[in-house]
Length: 100
Length: 178
Image 1 (tube, helix red, strand yellow):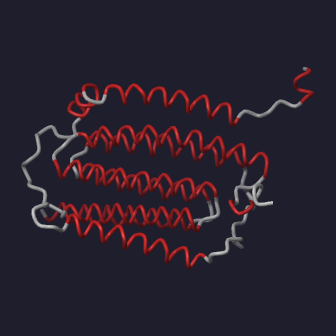
Image 2 (cartoon, rainbow over the protein chains, first blue to last red; image 1 turned 30 degrees about the vertical axis):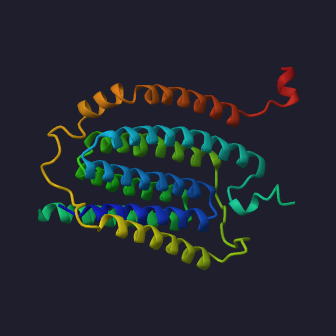
Image 3 (spheres, helix red, strand yellow; image 1 turned 90 degrees about the vertical axis):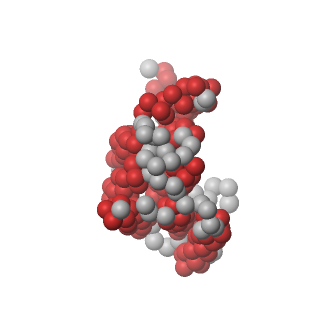
């Protein structure tokens, strides 16, 4: 059996890659996918803890997190479409309406 | 015993490699495809952690539905010729990268403190035979988590209505007259 800590380290690594994607990437769609990646990393940690304790509660949590991710993707992509219609770009640096 | 280790490490490498390639791409379509690779590897890890049902859900919902939604939006946006160089941020991307690495080290340190403590290894054979099967997850979901489960339907309804309202094109005056 692979040690449980390896799964958690992998989950932390995926989460860190997600944060790197959010702060470095300028493409709005890639930023959005990096957020999804962070959600998935958290899911992996939940599943790992569920396996560790032999408790099925974690699976129900992950189920609900998946639903939330689907809802978030729908609303977020709608926002991206609307903002693209107004600014004609998905470069996050070009969105500076509140800065001016 | 050995096979599990091999599967774990190859799936882990695939998951991390897919994620890294995802945030390095310029082309969003390639980025989506790399994310799907990462998701499939994560689903393998779920199955290895005896979460069969949730692993299948991950492939069906994420790779099958959400990522296809992303692809459709990318096709709708017509991003040909968009460039992403020349960040306007005050912090360089090197600084951001280092900050994220520090963040990872912090998480890994906490995990090391908590999980590598003695007495926290998985005891094999401790689980029920049908742990993570559809039957067991469903029984649990519909008994203990019935209200949260029903609330997700309201959440999805609100998300559908919100997405339609946000993405709807405002009618111009001429269209309204017609």
